[in-house]
Image (cartoon, rainbow, N blue to C red; front, top):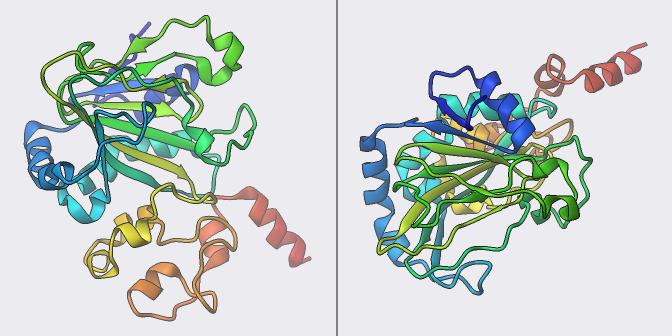
Length: 291
């Protein structure tokens, strides 16, 4: 029985299986200190310019700093990390594609109180997704050590499969982890930031992913200006949403591929080619048309 901590060399299917059952998983020491040092340096002026939260839920001693793709090149390493892509790809494999949903550096300062437990999928207008349908998969990277004292994320294991009433009986854990480690958690599990009773800020890089057919929480097309986007590689751009999210979703103008449009081309989306192998329902639809 694991305590929810995994080595970075663990097969992604093993991590995602634990995540599915428990709502969380932690991969220890996924990146080295140099990556986090670079990210902390790049983010520092933007953190300083970020306002504190509006209420106790946002955190009146908490700063939330977004647009990390444009502002912090080191964050791109975390977004496209192979362990993350493996786990998220397995976890959201029921959808045709998945995409970047949010990039946000969360700085919990000393004096912050414990956040109210919540389920992140409420962002989709409180839509009641089926119990077995996961719309998102989230990560929280430790930019500083996460400790019980400085506000490590609280998780109520297994509550993604429970009603709120049943979840009240579940004991929370705290996702304590070393700098450079990453917490995975799903959109259904009850969780929240911890109280910071220490004398230093706790910083976590919240990078979340969602199935390709929903609207992204952070508007990647405006958060990352097009002049910067054009300098990025195709795989990162597709993750940001410059791809078709599902059948007939996300093209530009006269059915132009969104990545091609960014690059100045009029190439049409290759709908059948993109979805034939990955979506049985779409293939059945095409087969019926061709009968």
